[in-house]
Image 1 (cartoon, rainbow, N blue to C red):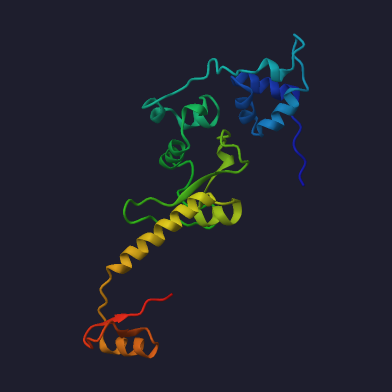
Image 2: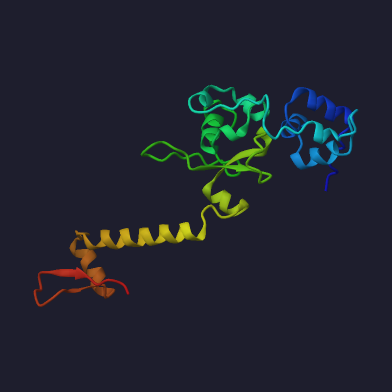
Length: 215
């Protein structure tokens, strides 16, 4: 396992000078928030408080918050580098901006899947945060995965309740569709189905033949 890099007091002070919060400082140094926090608490400032305490900004003072249409015009690098509060943006909006501004390629990072749905040309991709922290919008912490790779390598895409609802829905739709199916088969296909025992008379009328459904 590679050793985690040591963050010096000078590095923490430099990050504080260029940012407005501890979380933004961790992004500036290219490390996780928890790793930054560990070292920022080791060093004290001139007033005796730790550098972490000095740089606390829980109210977000000086950090711009964009709402509505303004969010669409905010430079994406300002968001990624922590100059703008991530609380002002939704994951869906971030995903769209990453694609629009070409920060991430619109394909699965693991298998390269990029096929588009014919009805709206969307690629079925999930924005995955590698460290599990959806507030860490560092570019290296984000990747696109297709639904299959997300399930195989990360975890369930849907909850058990969502899966049950979808399966029940599809079962209902399939049953409804099958009731309205009209079979148009040629004589060869009919003979083959008879041999398999899947074709028989509905009633005494020999001209009206129907498929025998599976149990």
